Length: 175
Picture 1 (cartoon, rainbow, N blue to C red):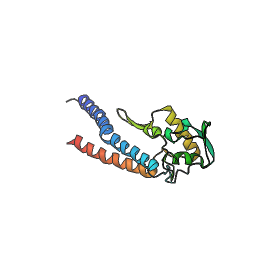
Picture 2: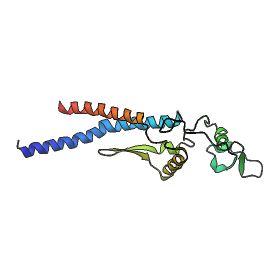
Picture 3: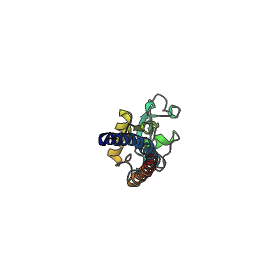
Picture 4: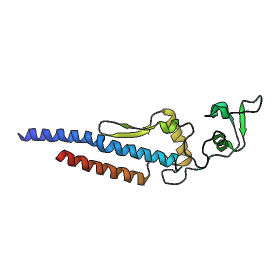
């Protein structure tokens, strides 16, 4: 084998291993990272710094039928097109049976459903798949601070998982 052939073979190995690294190490670790972020937000009601996201507004407000996810909960007074809710958005959620003890960034579920991972050939992208969900994220984070960004602990766990999987992949390739 000539030095050029050897170099070419090494380049092919590097290319193949980077694709395998993405597939076997980065994608699974990124899936776990995304799940951790979603659980922190939806289950724990915590932002990216580990604090509570906040509280739902209790400022009196009027809501029309379109504001209700559960349409059967919309019961305006006779002849009215809106419902006056003295406890505002918190009451809107409550009368539909949605949790109100902590902010969980989930009303219809569409924003969190649109928070996804896309695996590319040698990388992974985590983000929102719809313009509406992206705008909701921007609006919520403008009011409440970072929510959808990974915490330092979540990132450290992700990095540890990638390193562990990469080490195992490297050992497989060297055998």
